[in-house]
Length: 407
Image (cartoon, rainbow, N blue to C red; front, side, top):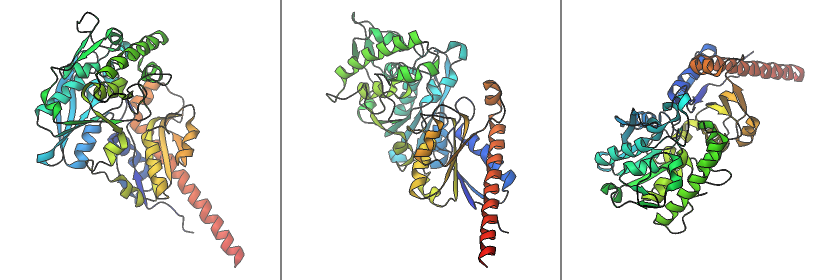
């Protein structure tokens, strides 16, 4: 009795924050699949979402070159950060990975206070790309450990943020409460001729009830009191940016993507005129990535995606939701694996994810789950493949009985 099983599977995950990058997640899922379906054809497409691994994924996919540079990390200590150079020699694009210079994983757990960290290193990466002569800069925004409204990046680019007495303020989000003016007369000269685009989650905004301090501050270590202090400081910073922005009336408070990477979106948009674009439009549909996700989805019988946590935020601009949205157009079913299933996880069914599964089968400390993420993912992929085989066997059995009865 033949059992119907998928003949071609597309594995298209994002990374698991502070545990595995997207490449490692994809490798682990493939290992689990092959334990059950050793002969199945697997297409692997790790998805760059602007966070950790973005520069390397795009450099690999587009045949580009990866650069490393020592920059100022989020706590002020030096870190090795990455940017990629892709495209033809006469019109090169730099992909600047924000997370490699100011990501949450670079902030020790006992030092997590998003009001004290800085995006200065992100600005240093942009300077490196400008000095290399690129024609366009694409900044991947994700997995940040900061909430300084992009002030640090602007300072690294040559801007001066001034208080009421005309003195430069210090670093970090709390200092934005004292900002009264922005002087960009000393900004890097090549910014006048190079387009800067930020790949954003469009749902992230700078201020208000859903502002970046209130939504993401606690995840980055802020107490309720610190969240309020940061929120007030970003309100003040928004007023400064609005006075400086080239486009009068630009919404730098609740406009699309203004809150990405702790307000980096608003800072670079208001400070240097950077363009904010939906990250999947910028990273997948720009013609730069070489990933061609839609074509690969069309060829698949099943798509498996993944992210660290599936919850109520997943439908709002996360990788699994974007993969499912595209798969729905082609009628391809989607399975999503997650490090954990949080509040509102079932809402992902409404965006086209047919089934979800957590990789943790037994209770364990978070530190243990993070350390063993690859093994847990492979085991979970094997379990889900066995469930798919079971479904195929039940379907084949049911069909056999119907045919026998009809005869």
